[in-house]
Length: 317
Image 1 (tube, rainbow, N blue to C red):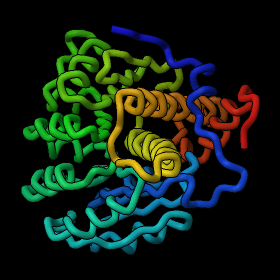
Image 2 (cartoon, rainbow, N blue to C red):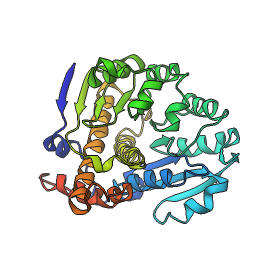
Image 3 (tube, rainbow, N blue to C red):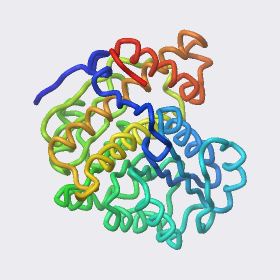
Image 4 (cartoon, rainbow, N blue to C red):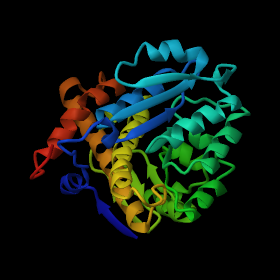
């Protein structure tokens, strides 16, 4: 096991550059699918986590019954209504979701998604059909708990999948935290060929090559519903920028496939998002205190966290 603490120096190295002549299409088109009746905040927090992390274009698909609520909170991201049944995204949303994902550099499935009999089949089918790099969070994880072989199949095709469970979610995915957080996360990542982010104090980012990063930032003021949604969005935003750069550099190749080196780079980007998420939380805690800070305060302080890293970067735009 190759373990290292993800330091500020590593953050400087991992932070994507921004071309001075770049346009919004150069900085990642990303898609979020989630939301349900009673869970309208999660997809919005994820969307602004992506936007504040530098995404050029952020698309957000939510069930039609909550579209009006969600749209009222979206200025810089682009929401759209999806077919729904009983307040949740229905199986009829498959083609709109797939079409959007296939036009994007990365996708996030799960924030506020809810649970239904239809959703496991829907999420599984999306994982099978799209080649877009995907992040699974929250109920997106629950949807595949009995279908984890899909992760292995994606890995065999060279497709990137990132999972972001907290310990409760990790348990129902079959993880074994009793083995130790780092060992358990690595065992899962290697078995299923994915990047696994095991959230909690000292969040672990485990890669299928046997390496892992342990995060030193963050505080207990972040232990509130919605903080994980912000993180999912931040991973999405940074991953989308990496994938967009890959798309630009490899215009004549299969852009969806990730080599071992590419997966390693994606692991570094993921660990960077975790680091910046915790750093934004530390800034918020210093200003507001652990009791009163909210997940929305994290999104507002992502720019300050990035600037903190950039000050040690020799050249940045």
